[in-house]
Length: 258
Image (tube, rainbow, N blue to C red; front, side):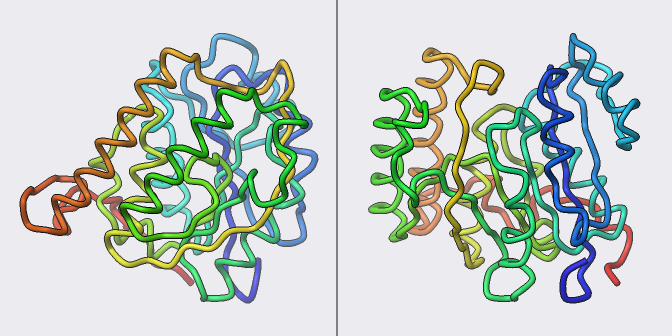
């Protein structure tokens, strides 16, 4: 708990058997109230590892996609009364010891969305990020910053923290069930006027780190362009899109925060 706010860490897992324990053991327990694992129908022993470690988990009955996994993560965390939700990949790419600083940024009340940026510290290519991914990240981030009038260091990190108010306030259930979900959520934050903050994190790029293929990465990039264009069209009144509809599908928020 931070400043009286209940903190829940959610782990969207898919075939994380080899890295789950390292990730879990690195999470700082003095500020985290609960840890939840949501498994997207892994084909390895992810659930067995979670059971051995005593991690509460929920398993999809079929593989539904990365975005759908996050939707389940946030709904379950909200149902458990979380006021700050930290999303951490269990592939050990992002440093679990940075959960506390990321949650603290949201707890400060200055932002509703906090990002663990791989770009702020520099040297990311030397630490293993493929050059083509780095260049694509820089290009897409530059384009979105220009179009959306922002100054974020990156839009594509998978290490994030959110306030309960944000997750209940945007129609995130209208977003993609695939990898584009991450980018759409940030574009929604910008569109609806939620403050976004960043801290530097040292990401790892190892053989067990999750990564999308160049082909899927290309489709993701096209999705980023589409999400940005939709936001601009919505702003100018030239288009209407469900992801920016204030009455769009949202998390239920059945329980009240403390």
